[in-house]
Length: 269
Image 1 (cartoon, helix red, strand yellow):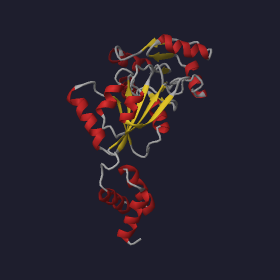
Image 2 (cartoon, helix red, strand yellow; image 1 turned 135 degrees about the vertical axis):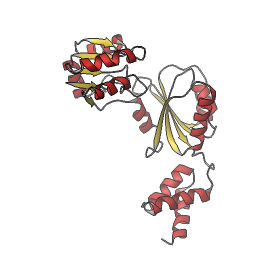
Image 3 (spheres, helix red, strand yellow; image 1 turned 90 degrees about the vertical axis):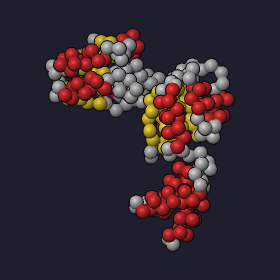
Image 4 (spheres, helix red, strand yellow; image 1 turned 90 degrees about the horizontal axis):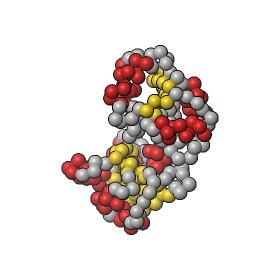
């Protein structure tokens, strides 16, 4: 028997694979956060199956029982939208199935994380997914400091009523993409600086939001010499001068041509 992890659309109901539909039809039981929401998806595709509510409030209690059941039945796990386990329930059950010797198959499919990352226009070679930020306290302060300091692209899930606070906590010059209602009728993507995003979204918002932030790459935050030094490091690791300069420039906010000229001049290449 197999335990299937099945992604479902994050908005547009057409964003589901043929394999996912087959698994949902053939599974002995579908585990879902909200039986009503999953029921609407199944009804759209004329699928009738048994549903069981499985969410953060009963996950710990049900995981061992369901893992045992998965030894003799094919179970499928979905969440309200997107890929299960990505800031959604499911980790305990996957671990329990693995420990029970049950095969686990994760189907590819929709995720607000990757959709926002791609549409943000920011570098994707290195990124960090933070889920939902801590609401307050030292943990939140340290996370914001990490974003400001670390050179990477950060992806954050945010609620409409907390977006303004998060944008206000970030450096005003930080590059951000605020992705709202992805794949839905009123999809909106704002690209700019944190201060501009705060002004743009000053009114009350509705819908689901993914915030993408370019951490540690505020223009001028790194000196030009630091950028050249970073490019030299990439060359020493095997990258071509052109690629190293482009990468260092993208990460530091300096111009690629200037970094390349200094790098080539310094290496004699």
